[in-house]
Image (cartoon, rainbow, N blue to C red; front, side, top):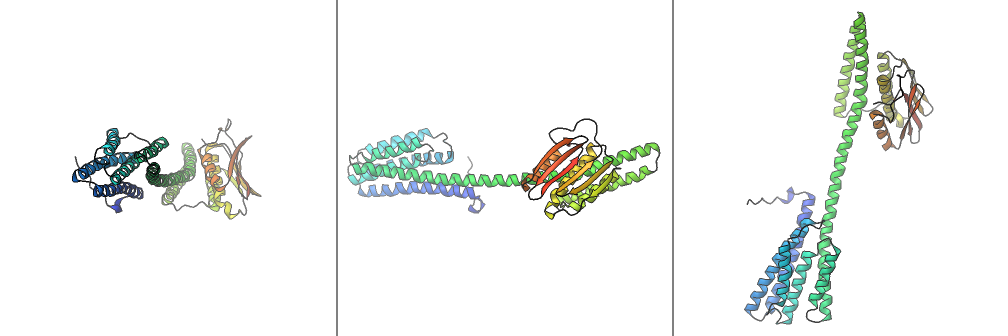
Length: 389
């Protein structure tokens, strides 16, 4: 059997420190209470034989109570398995300790031994999270306190048992609260990491998804031109390379966390992107409130991505009418748009919700409309071809 080297106090976490402090406090309370009473009883004992019997019996009861208390603390807050052999030693040893000849020859000794037994049993079993056990311990303290036939003994025994049960339960309750708070803090930290990962995945979807859609459209056009022997195919492939470099640069900015969402940049990028795909673009966007810029940029980005991926549009119009931003196109592929929304719109909805905004989608002949209601700014809408897959 190898013994683990005790860890330094500075190396322990806050919960481990509270756990160690709680355990040490309970053990010191139990041992200090027992030894002080044993010392008082031994001083008042009639002879050396009685002192020896008293000390030996007290040590047995104290050791059993310590083992049981440790099991109770280890199981808390659940009611786990107890070391029943040691519980039997504690209860039977306490009873025999009270009834053994010699410990009751002097009233002072009898009262002291009774108090020690009540204290050990109450401290050991009082921490069990069961009100029935606590009630039984208090009742047992009252019975033991009344063995001399005095009413004051009944009251003092019950009060002593109740006090120790409360002390142990309160200490374990504090330990439980600290453990739950630490677990909640760790959960918050994990949620923050998960939220940051989700934010990064959305940015990757928004940025790289648009760029890759452009690369696919331009590469398809270049392949068509090359099949016809058109010299413009080389020019289109150079444009594909340029877009790939831009996508790589944006991916690096995303990895560093330096890429903000800017409405003007998104509008200009949408114009360049759609024109490179052979789609005519008309912009009619004047002044947008600053508070809208980032959310409006998200809507423009997702709408243009949908146009590239899910439409056969030849013309796109982006306009701001009052508080409504509209991105409309003139071409929808055959078949109804996919129901339920896709990952892109779901991600957009989740990003707008923390701002107090809501997002709805409606289908109309030849188009697919996304409407985002922003707080204090009126409806913000974007019309695309269909919900992304």
